[in-house]
Image (cartoon, rainbow, N blue to C red; front, top):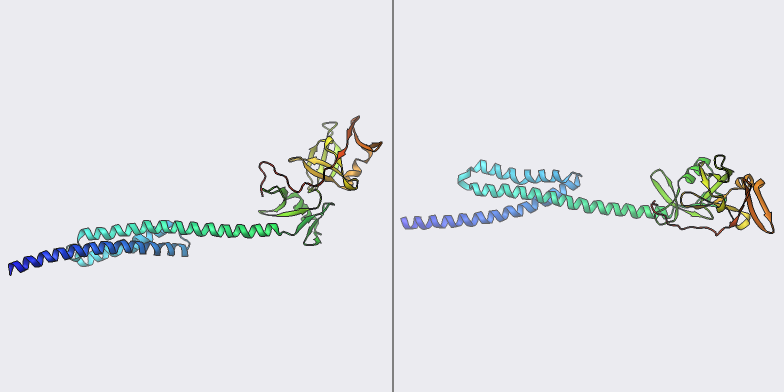
Length: 282
């Protein structure tokens, strides 16, 4: 009988070792399962990866501690096995946090890409058009409100791809420009710098312009280059009238008389729907 008892003890030790190894593997699977649960839970309630880590610790480490306390460290749950369960809990916590971060990043990127796609379609299909008289139209109807016209003019800019666009607040959209996007409502000689011109743009701001950039275009329209970037600006009828007493013509050639000197009026090259400038953006 002592031999049988010894054999039984040896068999019991081997069985316990096998059980411990199997349970250790089970803890690893538990860690992966808890990691997935943490990731999904944190994503569902929009929590941070830290919240996923906390959930992993509670899901894996606490049950191990409770089981160990209930059954005894030296009976069914030896101390090394408890450590395996606790380690599995922390592994689950880290994996859960990583899974949360990866899933949230992927979802965020896809949402951002979807929004950008929608915004691009809306910007392309803004329905805005600017005619050669400086009036904005929207889907075939002229914008009647003067304040809205002013806001649209003030928001005009070159988008990142060089096309004309207008901005209202944080949103912007492309504009179909019939002739010029800039308009000078008034031109006058700069009282501080004789021989130079100042132009009042449609938005109300005054800018300095080079008289040599004056050019005549189709239908006797006059144009001038204005900052930033030397953009082509069309003179309104009122602006052309403000220069009437300075305009001269001889033998088919036109010039502007300014501070006792003649400034030749060149020939306009036509619309420029696309231009690239360093530092432009939508």
